[in-house]
Length: 478
Figure 1 (cartoon, helix red, strand yellow):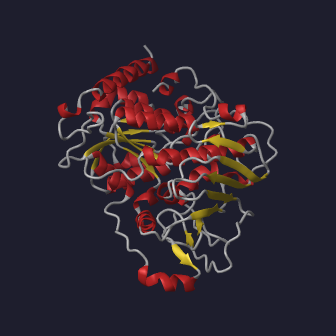
Figure 2 (tube, helix red, strand yellow):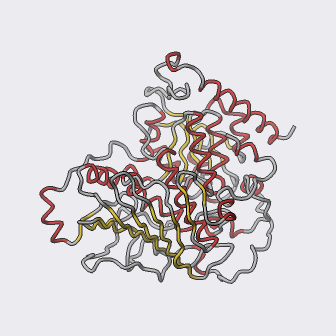
Figure 3 (cartoon, rainbow, N blue to C red):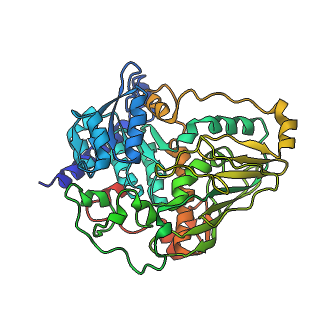
């Protein structure tokens, strides 16, 4: 019997078992268990037994940060290319830890020895790996964005509810200063009546040097001997290997990644989306796409998201800018745009002083705020207004834990995860809608209640996307 067949049987069996546990009345559940599901938290006296799925490049960085907390023991490593240079650092750190190329085989053989997993893999593979992990009752840390399609994110949120595990999306700024500042300033009434937000990321991207008139996907090449290309594809349709799909290049392609918006949107718009309760937009309009291409992302994009009124809060227009030549307008009294030390470098390179650094401007009816990315805090502009407000600016608490420790402490029942799927899911769906508008190059009218695109039947079908490859259908049944 093939390992994939075994994995499918194991997956379904485990999913049914976890669902049965979910039906146990809460008064039967031990205090050390998650009352929503009966899945046990890890004792605070024990370390979280963690498996790292995706251990090269960004996945490896996530693994190192989690290990540095001292709250976990590494019990398994999983990557589709264990022989590649980018995976060697983690392998050398944990030479005696079992290694797997296929996450399904890992769960089949080690499911009872794992408490939690990380998913630091290409965007298109986040969904099946996460569903598999949750169905096995494992807590999950998933790098942003959560998934590639609107429907995949929807199913991940449903899966988190069904299986009752701890979830965390890896937008690490959600555990840094801006998270606590934004919440404090919003609760104190300083950030109120917001009507517009400008968000921007104008650094170079991988596809900016490509020919925008490409007529087809790249020609097939020989698969590296160490790479399990079939598992890399996961549920995506069969495609011949090309080096421009691998090693981070996947972010360039609609088929596999989420472009600049999916990459940086969660680091720039996360706090505004959560604390202004933006939810889902009613309209997404790609008002400028330079060199639109059916295969990979535009050289520059300007996308307008219209969010409706929420209770007493007014509607908000969020305008996203990316591209080297697509710098948005800012207020005349904006001030300097120095390199912000809180903003990580792009692709491990040196962060350059741009005309405008990655970040946002937030416009309310009375005040204007400017902020950077990740954990970078907000300031009030112009300076004269900020000085007048300074004696009464609300204070905010320091973060009790970074994003990685927060996840592991949540696995122990000691903290609440700050970016669980219930929070990160709608944010990721906003980006899915934005990418769909980029790809189709047309305005989308969206019903947030029905979660349907109402002006374009084809676009509405694309919320789900292509059918999964044969053998991967079970992940789409929650």
